[in-house]
Length: 284
Image (cartoon, rainbow, N blue to C red):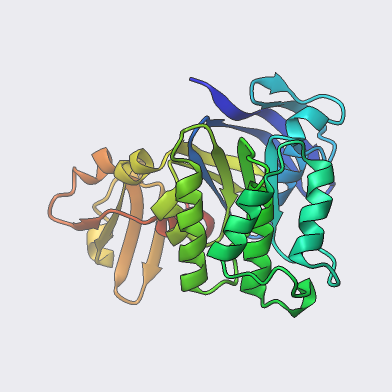
């Protein structure tokens, strides 16, 4: 299998926080959702990938090549969108195109104009006059108009309304159809990732808890619901995390373990359910 990105044993310490032995791989032509609570380490990992933060140890491979030096060649094939404004307020879309044409050898102005039309972005309006949604759509149009092999998004859709997010997800779907492009998408909006992601990597307190195919992950877990009295009959070895509420108890467990309790109510979790159980649930 070919990979667009491989992160191997990545470590980075800031004193009070540390990335600890982070490992995951993004296959070529796929979308990976990168999830975790605020402060879990998602942005730090992304900055290490991009060379914006110096790693303490570990290896990062982009398109099969180990990360070295300034990575100028590799960066030609990477598009990046961070949360927040990416351009100066006085700039217009035409100014951005002129700048990007000098930076990226594969800059495609025709494609950029296509996205401006598709997103209904005025080419001569000042960036500072755009709404948050328009700013983000312009940033995404810019990031993908030099035909990047890898698109990295750090909370790019957070704070956007569902209509704008759906419009952006459609563009991502189009981008990966040829199986040559890959996307690493960090987001708190797990419902978006449930729609588009092929793989999910879940980071918590600087450690990777899960990294696997999304569909397989969802199939491998069940939420078991029961009364407090019924909960006493569940073997501790079958429980991953436990939560209590006013109606009783809920347990996150592997599907094969949940099958032992056929008299109990169980359901397939969402990505958000899995994340909340790991972050807020209790160990037994």
